[in-house]
Length: 184
Image (tube, rainbow, N blue to C red; front, side, top):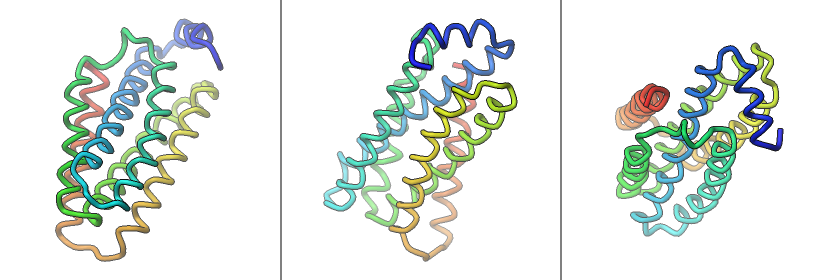
């Protein structure tokens, strides 16, 4: 699948078109937010290791956003993109004020949520025979899992109430964002 025409054919022939557009809208919004998470970290952190980590992952998220922009017609983008940019920036900037471990904890939580979100979509796309779109999302998911595993290895083993709270906050915020992005 290399052209917008291919996608338009999928949209026109797919009887669950509304579902697909809503899901891709949530992915587009999520990749927008991800870019701004890393921009927030870069704007706030003075730690060279965190900056290198963030710049590497920012490039991947930019590639993912470009893919989503190919998959989703501009008219179907979330009207809340300014909100996703601000929320993403704060999701990166605030943990960066607390240091490396909190940044890695946040990225770990975000990417774990994203992995589950993509997997649900991939399962449905495969069930519906949309293997090309599923394959593209699998590639994105593999990158996100890589980010999650790197963050998990860098944050260490210590687990406590703060970790549980950050993970819950990130997961709850991400779930709310997905629901809103699907609709608006």
